[in-house]
Length: 184
Ligand code: NI
Image 1: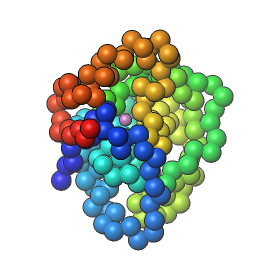
Image 2 (image 1 turned 60 degrees about the vertical axis):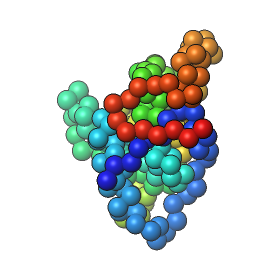
Image 3 (image 1 turned 120 degrees about the vertical axis):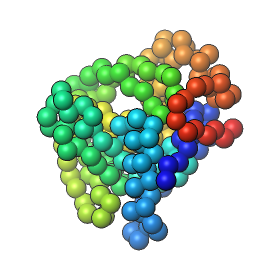
Image 4 (image 1 turned 135 degrees about the vertical axis):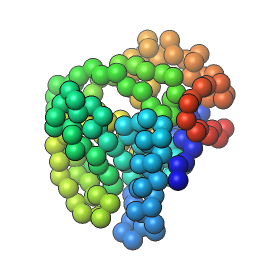
């Protein structure tokens, strides 16, 4: 099944999420449903808080960009309790959007690569270097677990320019071609 995606202006999107414990009930089903929701809305990443679950769980699939980068071909991941413990000094600019902030796309600076520790859906630990597009998605999604949206990472000027749009969005004025929900 697919979930509606929570939109900007919903207070729980700004809340830090709780770690996923061992024996989390129906984890496999939740992971399946999150992938289904992500694909249905043409997303490349989805964090559990975006469907109203404030837990540290992310799904991502960077393979859509594999044409430009063969390394991304099998880059489909479930990140449970992810922790970025090292980042490149170099930051790169990349255009981002977010299913929770429909209609807004902006360039954001972030480290080019990250080292991340996480558990997969079998609760097996991993330690992985993610680069390029995969690193970008992981950082964006892990931000969601802290209650941070990408628009908060823009320059003061860009934020000011977007203020009107965001304030309308938080009042329910937005368009999305996937299922959404907003609590105010
Ligand atoms: Ni997002």
